[in-house]
Amino acid sequence: MIQLSDRILSMEESATLAMSRKSRELRAQGKDIISLSLGEPDFFTPEFIKKAANEAMEQNYTMYTPVPGYDDLRDAIANKFNRDNGIPYKREHIVVSTGAKQSIANLVMAVINPGDEVIIPAPYWVSYAEIVKVAGGIPVVVPTSIESDFKFTPEQFKASITSKSKMMMFSSPCNPTGTVYTKEELRALADVLKAHPNMVVMSDEIYEHINFVGHHYSMAQFEDVFDQIVTVNGVSKAWAMTGWRVGYIGAPKEIADACNKIQGQFTSGTCSIAQRATIAAVNADPAILKDMVKAFESRRELVLAALNDMPGVKCNRPGGAFYVFPDISSFFGKSVDGKTIGSAEDLCMYLLDKGVALVSGEAFGDPTCLRISYAASEETLTEAMRRVKNALAELK
Figure 1 (cartoon, rainbow, N blue to C red):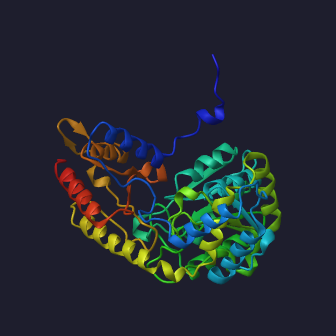
Figure 2: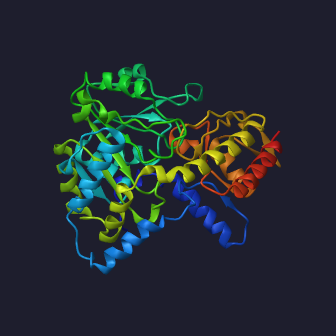
Figure 3: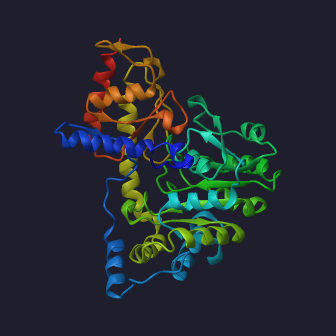
């Protein structure tokens, strides 16, 4: 009998993808399921980006690409970092990958040795801890609270660092909480980091442009920690390009070169057509996204109002991304029809049976919450919230 590796046996399936799969299976059986489980904009890729892809095919951009991406794309990304984030990256700092998830995996594999500790403030994106474990690293999960808007403090950061600490991973705007860090809060975290020159911070900024609180700030803008920050970004969320699979990093040259080396053995360069389309996206003025961001903000208000009207549900007010991460722990121990809710996972399965697919906070490092994606129409969200409210009211 073939034995699978310990590596794969210890790895958890992505909870967001698992719930999406369950939703599809139930729909195939004819059941009416509203899925708010995936982090995927319900907008279509803008026409000017699709036009760039068509032109690339007509110009026969159909061959292998350089492993870290086309030079003109890397130049465009470096320019975007300078323009939007005040980070002085150059071409040699940029590596383009098949989605930001591969960018993160490249980074972790390039930096982490077995036994190295990686500090991960919770809630966190589902894949962070699993990628660390694949590399042999040890995830050190540090809980935050809804009362503090799920923000990781300098005091927590300092207290988490040991002689084995090699990296800290976080996102702003955050998936799953929507939390957005201010410039002052990032500066305070950077002050802790600069006292530990052997540590790296991965700053995941994929939701950068879906921001309701004003300007987005990047930790790598601070000159004194520039060489310790790896900035992860991509075009999937803001530019509605999830299926194009293009992510990228800006990193110190030594780390960028290491990620390039790993990628050269695993996948080589990402899709040539998608890269040409990405040039159009990163060169565009982010101001053209204002209508999409306004739509997400309106949806946020709809969902927050609905949740705040449900007894027992507690929410923060997310400043960005397109998620709400409510605390639903007050329902633990309640029952209906002989079924008792013992966890967030139990509540998710109960709500799935009532026709709404959400994701348990356990997958994000907080077992008291659920993640709700509001990347859906207002009509769909209204119906989903009605179902959730009625289902929760049945629990006694």
